[in-house]
Image (cartoon, rainbow, N blue to C red; front, side):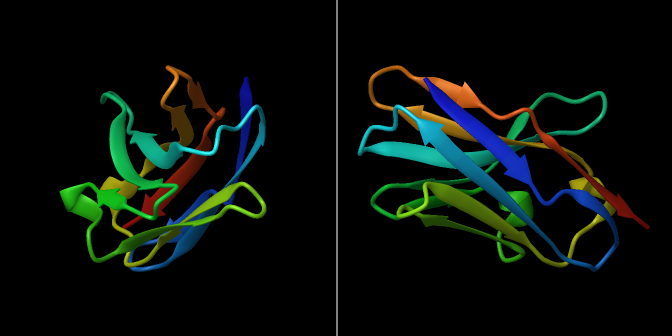
Length: 116
C-alpha cells in the first residue's frame, strides 16, 4: 500500500500561481509513475500531468506551457507548479501513484479554485 497526502490547494485569481505538493509513503517500488489528475464539478476526472522515475513527463494539452511537474525521489514527493491559472483550472486535484505491479493509489484531493 502507498499513502498519498496532498497540500497546497486554495483560492487564487486568474493569472495567479499555486504550487501543489504530494508526499508518498508506504511500499514504494523503485519504478513507478506519479502524477496529478483533476476533477471539475460535473465532469470526469482527467489527467493533468505525470512524471516517471526516469523523469519522463506527460501533460494535458490544456496545461502545457503553464504547469510544471517535478519529483524529489529523496523525499518521495511530487510537485505541480501551476502558473497563469484560468477559471477552467478549477477543480479537485488528486495525487496519483502507479507502479508496474498493478498498484494504483490516490490521495484524498485538494481543492483549487480560480476566480475570474
